[in-house]
Image 1: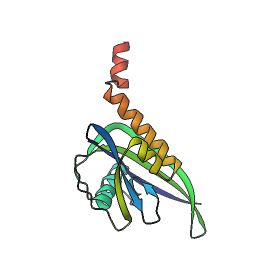
Image 2: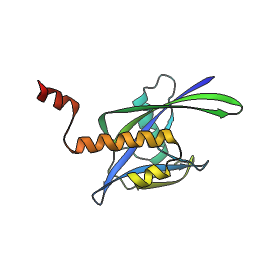
Image 3: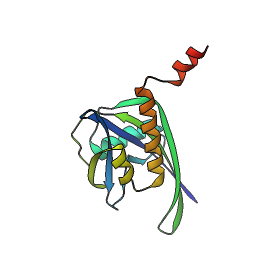
Length: 152
């Protein structure tokens, strides 16, 4: 079985006092995050930064420390089974200007509930849920390292 590795970002911004997530519609009609193949010798985070720039034109990222998720799935391409591993990071952006690549036909900024419904794949919905929970905990001021120092 062939193996592929990709990296990307769950991208969000605050809009009208609400968190909204950026989703891209692929030519094959599925909705997902900005992500793509990791090139030989490239680090995951560098691939994610390159891919978001190529797929959306976004260059100003506020990468959120402490969030890194991996999803794995298998699919068939040209009669060959492929095991894909995708590492996703979390970033906040300020921009409203999105320039989608030729790989995509549309984009949207969606609330968590709408994004969850739009995402085509269960693995993507799961990692979106983790990101939303992570951000909600952060917003309330809890961080594991802060709590550990309070417990001592």
